[in-house]
Image 1: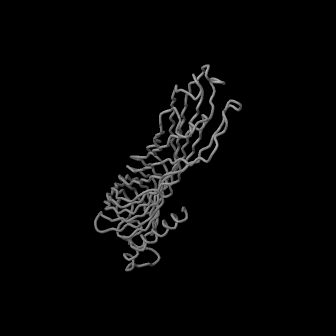
Image 2 (image 1 turned 90 degrees about the horizontal axis):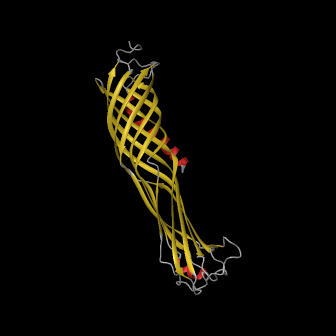
Image 3 (image 1 turned 60 degrees about the vertical axis):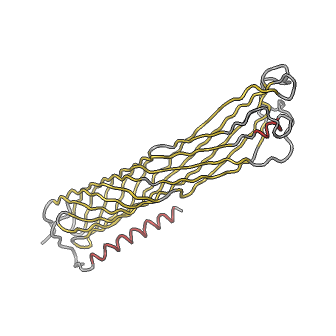
Length: 337
């Protein structure tokens, strides 16, 4: 999948360059252009574009029900866990995301250091609302454990069906800021083709995973030596919400073209691929149920429920943007005639 993203990046750069190549066909491709005015100076721009968000998210969830005996005369071995019932779930979302629009503002300083070459620094901020949402149902086999060997009743017999849990994932962008630089080549005196690289920080407006795990209550009765459905405990499914970090950091690579359209004005068309490094979050929930009559006269039972969920993720964003740019030119070009 990462190879596909790199191919997409290269293809978009070629496409952007081709758009501006038409503007350069009538130019003199001699040893060097003779621009009327330099590209050196400060510039500010506003614009917008479209983007796609792709998130790779991996989530795990588990629940352990420990059923034990309250210390009373009715228990042969009081105060111990008789049996643990374990459930584990996994989910993986690849390229979770969507598409949408965004607004951008930018500032830059460029320096023309040779007849055909320009280098510059840039900073820009984007505001967007691009989100991805998906829900996955995952099956888990039921496993049994005896935490205190010799204190457990007979192992359950029979075949036990898997339980079905749900993992609901959502991630949405809010705003981002990039700081970096670009290097460009003058196809002619009016057209600059360039590559860029930048550090990017992004804030997320909504990044969370909700997990629901069913209660294996039918099997509690079996663990206690009875029939399915004979558990003395009330039904208690687990619900957890994993709040993922609000911000992530990474880098952007891209390129495009900028063309002067008269006076201090120019227009810019650009493609960017942004990778935001992975982050993670987790949630736990513990509760107890006590005390309920056991199968032996006078005995009382308790149940400890421990639930856990964790998620790790990283994000990739691809954008195509355009901007109208105002330049504060520094004066005539030292390379012009």
